[in-house]
Length: 379
Length: 78
Image: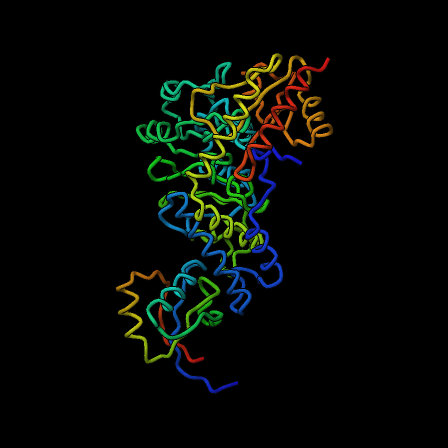
């Protein structure tokens, strides 16, 4: 199989990630629960991974690197924990449902009002719109670092500057960029950075987290066992326990730790460069094919995603043919990005997303180009 | 069970601070080990650093210099 669905999850993991998970599953106790050897080893692994991720994202205090099971959980913690009831929030049309649904729930249940910076037919946003939408009740800007549908990147340093000029909280969904492009949350003015471990970071599914700017307080999304302050009827207020109720995914975190080591060995800029080169090769190959319609603005910074349709074929039919006839894995449909599909005019057809990773090869890209060409020529 | 003896016990607010203490002690060649927190000190993290009681002043000085985060440091009969 040629796996080109890396924006959903990077299926090909470094061997050291797999080895680390297997080793942890035969030796790891429960982190923060006990002081015997295997429990301590788990605590050390979790701590080391916390430190590595904090360093990777420019979070100044490792105990403010909170583990979650994915971006969605991280975004729920951030959005429901930091946004006051009755306030106003600005987001964008580029968002995934992991941002949209928590916001819509606050709208329905906590009298939060929402405005969305519109995307045009190419998926671009106008940065001046953020400032225009700010009202005295605005409490936060929540936005993605890159669209999961098009790969279009948002200049989060620019948005962070707008947020902080107006005293607003800035929450970023880095699901598509963590591990794929360099991120420095402090330099970019990000207050809460939410990420998943199983995409660009190349770690196991069931891992992720959020980095919280020191000084910020969030109401816990869930409460329960913490391994500390057992006689306290409330969730402890100390980081990270305040936001980490329940046993962590220690086995997954061990794998994520190995994944970060792998990324650091190669260097994220080198990974970014290769993935973009592969995406450009694919783009160049398919853009000249009659009947192929590409989506997005390829003159702006992007992650390694190319999204297209073939004539008026339903995107699911194209993706199905790629899978069944060529062994190429892609993602059709709506990609949990309803607002952007509306902006692109692709609600009824969907779109076929090709997303590339460090482990893809030029030969695989060329095979995919040939497959698209053949499908576009069929009648 | 061995006879009780005075023991230096350093407690922490959270597990990351306890693991950081272990790394700090290893780096600075301070004696002791992580262990379950004595029940009499049942506030905070479930982990504590145990070391010989006669090291208290040394620990206090080195930990202050290293700006180590901890909840409390005391001598307990264990």
